[in-house]
Each structure stands twice: as C-alpha cells, then as structure tokens.
Image (cartoon, rainbow, N blue to C red; front, side, top):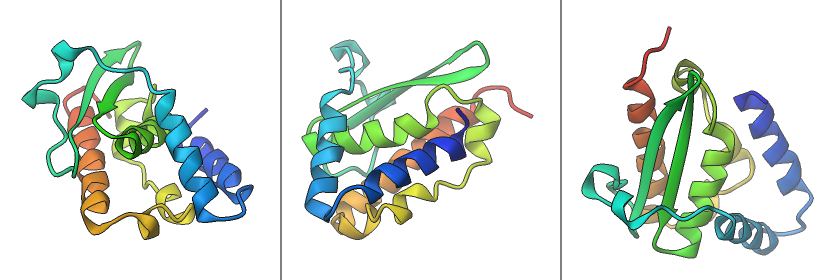
Length: 138
C-alpha cells in the first residue's frame, strides 16, 4: 500500500469515531501495539529532539524500503509514533521525501495536541525525512 493509501485509510478509520476522546483512545491503543525498542537503541543518535517526552527512532533500508522502529516514554508519544510509522514504514526513501503528510490535519490530531506535543510531532517528521535522505533515492 502506498503512502497516500495509508493516509486515506487512517482518515476513514478516524471518521468512524464519534468524538475526539474516542480518537485519542485509538491513538493510545496503536501505541500499545508498537514493538518496543531495545534499550541499546535508546541513544542520543536515535533521540527525536524537540519532543515533550523522550522518543527514539531507528531506520534501516531493507529491499530498497525504509524500515523504522520507534519507542517513546509516554503512551501518547508511542501512539503518535505508531500512527506516523503506519504511514511511512516500509516505503521507499524517495516516496517518503516526496510526500505531504495530510492525514495528521484531516484527522484533527494537530488541533488536539499541546503546542509542545505538536512541535514534537514536527520534530519526528523532520527526523524521519532526515533518515530517509541518508539513503539512495531518485
């Protein structure tokens, strides 16, 4: 599934929830399913700087596609990580770099985050783009 298909699928899922509280619970549930990072990967090199709570992300290129692993100190950080990785994981570096992430606004996530959490989300996206730019792309 390509990036826009993933984004559209998430938008459709979020439309099923009657209110933001239900959506928030869904984000937390997604975070609970996120595979934890090994402690050896929780280093400054993998730290997402600018997040309210600590979050880490690692990346590898597997068969020409980016594979990310991430973890966060808090349930909401883990949920946000899981949500973003659902869209960008296992995509080609050039596809990631050429993508506009529109789903975050359309599901209302940005409107329901504190200023510092929203800044952390932007830092996460910048970190992912920075990681993707390290690999060959067209």
